[in-house]
Length: 343
Image 1: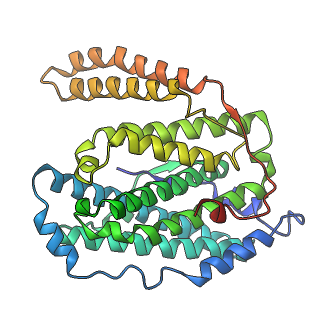
Image 2: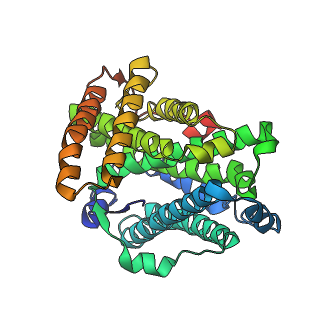
């Protein structure tokens, strides 16, 4: 399931305290705040009878995969809501502008989570969001790591949604569930969130302008791209069900996300090098063997012995991919918003 991230809220307050940092550039935050206040999607997430009718026609393995997709997506959006809500609360005194943006982003995430949870009701299921609040397990990241990973998550979400939307618009025979019709506007929420995290990074040049920043940028690119690729390759039935080739779709999303990310991160992976995809596919093979070993009828000791060399092989591939020659990139000086560049 998706992870719930938490962070050092005291450090976050210090980073964006306008009393401590008199030179903190607030101008882009103020413009972004107006964007969020406009709330372009206020009336967008309105359901109709198509949802239940379409869900009743989805059966077999594809139905289970749809349920899993909705559950994972709903959980991820809800966890985003919790993190952004807390950041909005904690920053209210030190930086009201940034705090309000976080609060408005939590509004968006709550709206998305509620919409997805209603989608589960079409399949006669529902997630107990109150239970998730109590049962969540925390993954702690320092603020700069939250910026890197959340920027990537929001931008990769944009490219996933817009790619699926455009594909289904051109191939309506695969439009098996109406939630995809909402993706064009929905992905703009993801994009605005990514723009905000880009602004947060630009306001803290120390996270972008040294050798450590380059290493962390590459590390988080690798982590996010590999996680998506391995997860999606376990769910090829879903992508085939909507007329997409899983690996082609993922590589398109990775390439576009990487090009967008190169505008802000000081270094990115060379994902358009054919070696990058060859290594991803090798990781898929190893991961499939790991899953098979875990699902075998062997005793735990035998399972563990089988998995040790596979884990070592996977780690070796990850390291080799990380050590590929990177692309030097990034700029902390932007004349226009990224949103205008990628729409």
